Image (cartoon, rainbow, N blue to C red; front, side, top):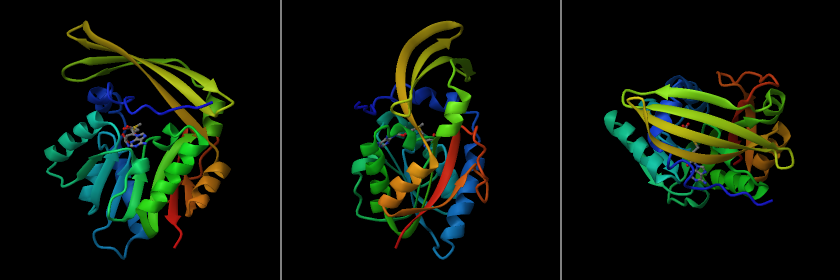
Amino acid sequence: MKQQYSGATFSKTAPYYDVIYGGRNTEHDARIIIRHLSYALSHIKHPRLLDLGCGTGAHDVEFWRGGYDVTGVDKSDAMIREAEKKAAAAHANISYVTRDFLSYAPAVRYDAAVSLFDVLSYMTTNEQVTAYFSAVSTLLKPNGVFMFDCWYGPGVLLSQPKIIKRSYQSADFTVIRTKTPSVSYENNTVTVRHALTIEKEGKAVSRFREDHILRYFFYPEIKQFAEKAGLRITSWGLLDFPLRKAPPASWSVYFAARKMP
Ligand SMILES: C[S@@+](CC[C@H](N)C(=O)[O-])C[C@H]1O[C@@H](n2cnc3c(N)ncnc32)[C@H](O)[C@@H]1O
């Protein structure tokens, strides 16, 4: 079955993304990721870091504060515009590019790359996953470091995705979101239908739907996909320094990898 990631998927959500996902502590997560990257790159003064699928740039200002020369790439222009606002508000010198990272071909190579909050899971076919690791490998310098996360097969299957309805409040509006999942055991994917209502002063001003198709992964396949692209997994587990062994019920896991010289 052919499944496509739609570049428009995040375009409708972009203005509400930071309100919906505001419960994450991305600054804290970014600081842990910096410890991993800096441990591996201690010999480099001002390392060049690429954030693949940077979205609204949730981690990027913290990376920049940590001394990294940050470039974010995302195929959703609406997400990139939110990221640019965030960088401008923090007076952070971060470069943003609207592009499909699978065909991103800058003149430079990076010391480090990150791809955070399930970006890999949006690569649903084997061809896309192969292209993803190959793109990362090409973009990194030899010995470059890569950190990423994705949905973890055991956790998804043990937890059984359920319908979730929640509301999120900002100063100006309320977002009410219902997520309805359906699992494809054949493709290792979950199609999650997001139905959103935006309310202002108690009145619905907009309603829309987005389908997100995400793939869950198992460790041996990640290892194989990465190695085929010349990337060696150096550790994996829950985000901490070092990464902590993931219990089987974990919904998502992090991986650290190194480009083989
Ligand atoms: C769940 S969001 C994560 C955003 C951000 N990393 C964060 O932590 O909030 C996934 C992002 O990946 C981007 N994305 C997915 N496939 C992509 C591709 N092939 N090229 C560029 N961006 C992509 C989407 O546009 C979206 O912004």
